[in-house]
Image (cartoon, one colour):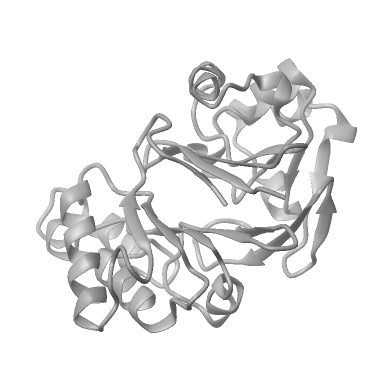
Length: 266
């Protein structure tokens, strides 16, 4: 069974990931307008009617902006933790989503969805009850781990065995510290429940990437405190210094802020 992956959007402004098989199509997050998601799906030769479910990581608007629209327009079930549902922003209009389409997920509890096995796991972020996701078939595994203030033991455990990893590489430390953000916002981003820096993304890949990892996408880049080139070069330098060979051990790219730029089929 072939497992397919593409990022539709990945930035501090909006996030949406496509994962699918021959029989099932899901999104992880829908953090941009329904119209933009529909436009991007065309590049995958899909429409909103082809999406079987949306799995939400947490309630911040850059992850849920289009959730309500997709649920209402296409009768798509939405999966999220109880804490996420309780804190959905008003823009989502969660009260207008059919009750039977408001579905719960529970961290560290596997669920079968059609031909996929999906495992939500706790992530350290300043949201109500945030989770990352691993999506598996018999042979392959994709893990989405963004909006993480630090690399927890839970993240390490769930990344193991992944063929594809979407990993946060949110900010360059110097750009953030010397940038225009208010002091409190800088401290939030740098905290253990904020966002992962380029340096920490590189260190994690150096220490914990295993032989099954084939493709890494660096995601959720800050528009103000990072650039694709800075993120890629910083992570590349750290992992190559540790002995990892890009293009040999695994391939790595920066996920585009919007639009399907690369599709992977395992």
